[in-house]
Image (cartoon, helix red, strand yellow):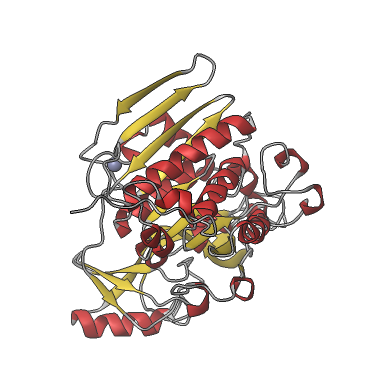
Length: 406
Ligand SMILES: [Zn+2]
Ligand SMILES: [Zn+2]
């Protein structure tokens, strides 16, 4: 047996990476990753992912670029202000390395990302600044059984957490009563106030964004190479004291996030199918009548107790703003919320999309006795979910910003 020869090829973009003993550039090229959030952390994470040559990177953010982002976001320029963060970051990232296919989604992760997309991925990287979105991403990843790496930064400090369902602790396991209270607060008035979700204007420096973003990507590399990771552990760095430590997170057995979809019945429907179509198909499958069970409230209508005016809304509560709850007469209207949709006359012609079901989602059908069937939907455009290699990313850009314009 001869020693492996180290062959240096300066013309190969990935040569210095390939010299790492355990490195598998083909594995990295085949990898599919979703980055949630295109702010300071998202910029740093995407920078590292494209330098490494990660094959497919989905990037979702509903925000637009503002001047205050420019001090911490390496890909944004003054002239980009007012443009969607996801789209600008994706196109600049492709310049850095055309080998990476970066697919931007200008939209809200809580409305636009289906479990089917998550299931097609190797890893999700969270670059978020609020509890609601983290909790949502956590539940999506648990249902899809896909690991996710959460990053958080504040001032000069930060934390990285690697979650690998179905084992170990998840994000929700560590949520305190106060965390739930703060989330509930947003939903209780009675509808989510869109502006509040952005309240997380956390003070941070670009330096800690680089450090934590890099740490997240290093953990991602370990997951891709099946190296040991600190799953279910908080990796904490205090930038003032230069103190860093690991803290094992406790797993909570009654945690609501620990639901993994084991058996999925794949349908040929997209989320443009109607309630009648999917329920009829489900009835064939189950031999009994089924309803669609939503994971969150959907607003059927709003009623005014004062002037008795009623208006059809037919949108997920999440996309209804507080302002819309105000009646013409000035009173606050009462939302009629549902999370169970039967195939009755009132609902049968509605599309799944109208119910707030995302593209490429996996939906839940439920019988009257509480049995559940998980049904996979097909993606709307096969083109935005390309098999490698990605031929023309510019043509596949998706912009789906409805419901959260500013
Ligand atoms: Zn949990
Ligand atoms: Zn009224």
